[in-house]
Image (tube, rainbow, N blue to C red; front, side, top):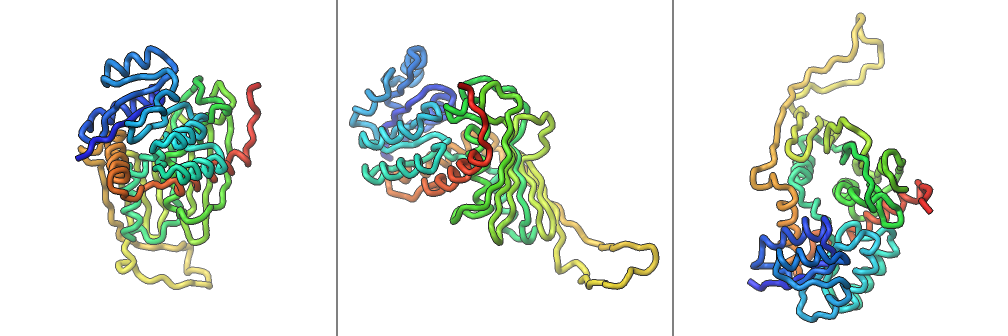
Length: 352
């Protein structure tokens, strides 16, 4: 098995806690050769923890010719320009989310990858979330009939005060957290076309000028309506997923999902009654309900590592054998188009 040499730009939460800490667990596939960060203490820590080289300027890393992959975990607003620099320097790149703020930036990144003949991947690992896969499996099984609406809620209560609350740094709930549930949501309405988008954003508890309340409705002809919330203003988060179906419904969170449904062949046929029903009565319907449950398997309870393992396995195959990416840039381009439309509908004032 070939070991791929990796450089990581950024040693904050994403670069260190998500990427470096996971990659060190699979040294037979990926070896951390160098990191870059503007803070000297982070560089020193990485040298000690990973036995790698470090750079205060990421451009010094780009001059190396022994790297098979560079992870761009720089601050969000630097994802587009730094990714283009990495590609233009002749390196494959894995860009953290959000890939960009505007579709034009995505197109520039994809064009740079094509010119360089290098791989461009985006870390949308939540496509491999076990709870999302389970919801998809239940819908595909047909037991709920036609899915009419899918409600997704990545909610909680928080008063955030870091750089990710600023629009100039591509902050706000939609760009910080939103890429994960939005990628999942687009799987229900279809990744083949731009859905209709309605969005409401608000700034409630954030110290910056970006939103911390975001409500999105996505729709497309013949597809389920998707109701997506990414809000930091509820102390009573109740679910991650709800599905409204023709024969039943589903409810669940990231560790437990349950669904109930009736079987059409077991239900009596209904006929339309135009005349008043006899007596002081109302419609009655006796259904036999079937209930099922799912709990996340023990080997996938560590959500971050479970998703990361599948993502990096696919990325390794793409780099070593040319396997197709499960999440190609074209999929993420659609996501950024939705994000751009949401911001167009909700222009928020900025801190000068």
